[in-house]
Image (tube, rainbow, N blue to C red; front, side, top):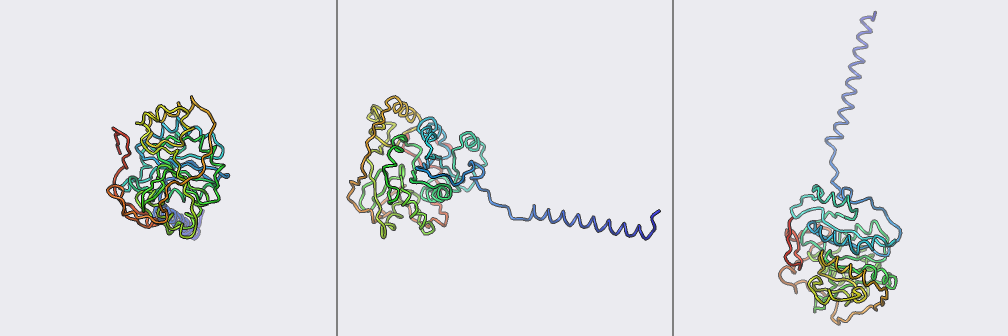
Length: 348
């Protein structure tokens, strides 16, 4: 028999134990429900785990709008295959995490499936639409934190890239000097390398990152980078490589390009190449393959100054004001920057 006194002790101990358990549970509930929620890292959601790699010769960032899956697939079946085979090169598609209203696209099943299937998407926390300067700014930080590279190529998803020729040529270029390389617009007070195909050397990349927190952005990437280069040239010599092998018109609608043999012996990249012609040009490249590439010397035929840049020269959709990149600027809510592709149907 348990004495009355012992019963009281047992009851008191039981109450203490129960109270203690409830208190413990309450702490756990507080941690679960009252702790601030960590913001979603979209790269954790849609990107394979990336770590600081061995030294790369080339990182290629293919800028692509969410809706242009047909272009991405065309690239995947053509020159991206050559990139994947190269031991010192990485090629990724760059798309935005947010639409122009700030809604997270990672909730869309379609893009998640595409990422899981191909493992080649980088989703930046940037707005869709005409916000290219900030997109490149964010890309630089993403790449800088993960890769040790010699050259960074920013390219549009409507470019047929002669990847085989590019990687053959890169070892002959000096990553130790600041180089910006691409198709050059030679316009007084607005000289710039077009953002559709733009390579920067490691040296120039490092300078951009040293000045990262002070850079100004423009809605268009080539204008933003032109402004960065004006500041850099106050203290550093920058080499501008004006490459005539980058075809800047609409290759998909050019009979001259379509009839060219040994296409990659004459050109390095073909702008305005859409999904059907992307496959056609690659078939021509494979049929005519002749690796007798000539290393083109670095040239700059444009004699106009690159040390000034007046963005007010531009009109219409090409005009935009500058804003500090660190402020995460948004210029407009255009859902997509329409390219020169004819009869295109864009659904957002």
